[in-house]
Image (cartoon, rainbow, N blue to C red; front, side):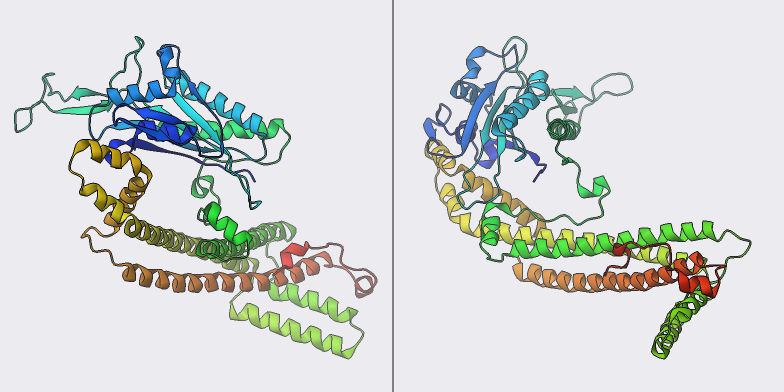
Length: 498
């Protein structure tokens, strides 16, 4: 199944990360860090298909060696909280062969990264799927944040732009220091550049789909930006998918089933709304007269036709009963003309838009809470690792400990940031979050039931439409002609499907 994923983070010392360790992990190699004085060994890591270093023409050729490159980066970055590299994770496509995926990745990196003067360390991964699950080919990219100048030396990541007064003189602050803004020397970290890269990768994949004659496409935009009126599901991950495949129902799987059921209902309702509104326009054109017949008159004509075709007394009684119920429904809703019917359908559309907006908010918050559950669990399980770091006072053993537990510390810090953002006072209250989640679940059920009420009413309106269409088609025909012929128009089955 075609999918789009392209994300970027920063590798930085403030999160306990090492450029050497990050590169060794992605490439599945054993690399020595001069900064920390130790090896990072990932030679036993599986799933690494290939790796390579791509250099711009002005970069020193010795940087084609992975260990040399990242030790040079570590040496150039002196700060203890320095930002070292951009780290990209990009999904490949199962519809392409491994060779096609690698060629596409290399083309993308050369045309969009190396052409900008970026040094690229990339590795293609395809983890084994012993359980027969969906393959997950992807590639990792590490690029130094600091640019290389034309002379082969490392350049500045930022430059100072001083604020000037109206006479062009530098402005000083209260301490007498010149006021300046730190401006990046490249556009590599800008949101606009990331958006361009995401779009370009999607276009490259889509061009390959078209070349292979495949009727699938990917889109770098979110559902909201695409104008797709659907709620996004949550990422399940390999472990969850494996459990679901074995018939073990998981929380994430249940959440996604809930989202998919809601999306199916929304699609059904929107299709019915569009169908009814389009039909109103067609009927207006058909009945383009100074004054259109009212709905009851058209229904009366339809049921009179059905009565003429009924040979049994029970059939005639059933027709009269159905006619009476339909007229009572129209009167209870104050639907007398096509204008009234169109207004009701339009009101349903506005109501559905409002309900969809409510669902968006409920779903987004429920996802946040679920992520906070995960963050809380990660925080608790990794707290001993963090505490172990705090007990080490000397730089060398502290740096060694950081390198050994880089991934765990990274996860711990990320979880702590999320929890701090939710609970600024530092008092994590998971019971409060659970109560909020339960409330949102109840509210979702109420919203879902409102959707069902709209769907049921649209079903009744579609039945009215069928009657009116038939009456219009038989308008002006004699009773004998009606008995001899069936209605000409066949209505689509999906229009009347519950």
